[in-house]
Image (cartoon, rainbow, N blue to C red):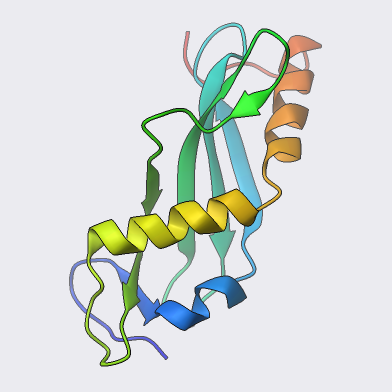
Length: 125
């Protein structure tokens, strides 16, 4: 169940967030040494494609992290039990928790590895 609106958010009940089935769509490198970028994950929905995106950094030891301040961008707005918007802050908090449970780092690592081996180009110079 979702509620349509004209602000380009796709609205779903907060309880449905863990049932989205996000899949990796793309990971982009935004610096020349594959040290940072962003990753996008998507899910199908009857009203629109749901998109969740966040920045990442790669440390000298190869560890990949979601940098502070942690921000998640999305076209998703969660609804409370009365079908009212939870608001951007609470929706982002729920999305941050979802990102923490998602196994996203291997997808970013593969993109960095391909770039380091010379198999792809960064998106920024």
